[in-house]
Image 1 (cartoon, one colour):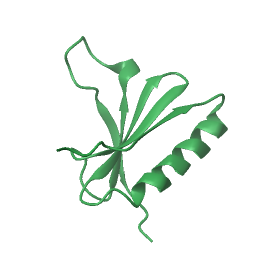
Image 2: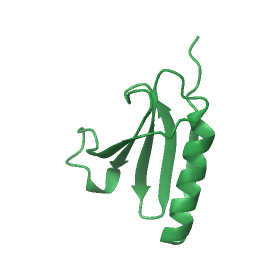
Image 3: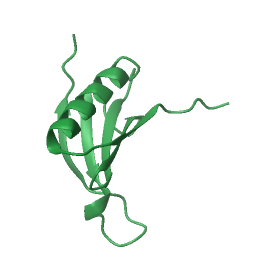
Image 4: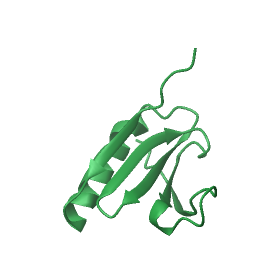
Length: 87
């Protein structure tokens, strides 16, 4: 039996709320991300997902942008990786 990967979907109205809500979601998932990292994906201009991802190295957060995705069938380009602030 496989365990579901936690996923948070965020709908934003402006850049300030986007940043605030993404940071909040990353913080919530950081404690559960044992052995893997976090993937933040822009799905639409105002929709983002934040998920624990085994393809991301532990301690890192990566961003993917589906709006900049190449033709169908290709994986989204990962733009940036930065370490979690572990406390």
